[in-house]
Length: 439
Figure 1 (cartoon, rainbow, N blue to C red):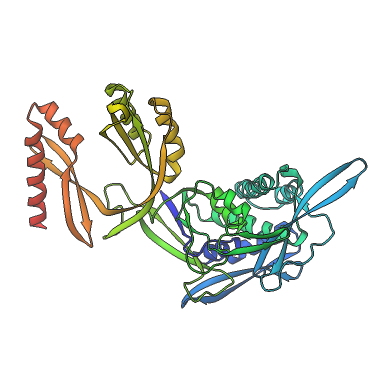
Figure 2 (cartoon, rainbow, N blue to C red):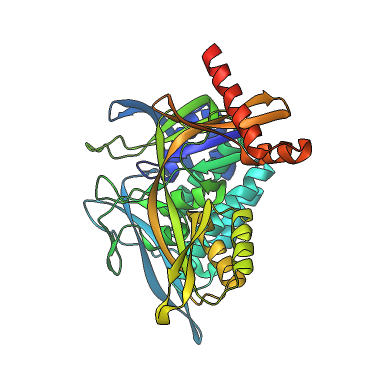
């Protein structure tokens, strides 16, 4: 399976994503033709720059002659009299970060229906059109919820709508051209500090960005500025199927997309890596250790049958829990009970919490985030007297630190051949050690 991985160690914006696409091999002409097909008075300027000493592609969008400058995002609420009713309109405006917000033009901005119509009539790939519309809808839905209004009442400032359309539609077309079957994203560095808005100063991430990144793993590091923009968040939310550390793959190519600012702390880049997903029997992580954030779910149980608890634990594992275990505890009034603990991926925490409520008698589930460090691992298959057995091998800095035969393989052979389980496991280990000595 062909996969793409986004490293968002310096956040992500629409123009950074476009730069990474071009740097990874997407034809600049394809993006330029896409902009022309939109027919909204925009053009692209594509150049080579360096960020932190790393060469990258920078994509600038010119909308009605205006360059896509470093900017703050703000929304202005206006009242428009229409006979006996008022319409609330939030319009997106831009201003250079050092000068503060500039006045929003009085021209009515573009709403989602108008933007959708522009994308629909453009002469571009139909699948890319659908993707672009989904990205824009995600952005509009987040803004509508933040401002307690309907999606159709969200209006983008005239220049802002052109800039966002170019970023989003080119992102969809470029991504489609890569023929990637799965997009995976790293945890996102959202930056920090504050942004100036029409109604005051707000902390980073901006409200719409925060809404779009719900259930995504995020952190704050480096410069105290906004690193993930609403457009970047909407692209990630729509394209990426999961958030994870760098996946196992045979790397084909990589590209770097540059942000406008050049930070002294770290390269202001997003990295796009494309390749073929590695088979499950090959190395699944780097030769050393890797870390990721996981959710730890806990519940105290003192009125649940052990049989039901065992069933609940099996269900949790079957539904994707990373690990499930219970330990005996003494509850209030000296009642014996059990502490159920579930380790889960961040994106699975809500679903597995509901399963705990469904399958046990608990009235509450505690949740916390923890950093997990894991050894890299790989599988090898050895032949025993009774059949093949997989061996799980753990590595630390390229050195084997542990190995063990797969229990289910050994159990199946022991039951089928009527031999003791430990005999099968011992021979599997001996065969593995023999193969290592020969190697």
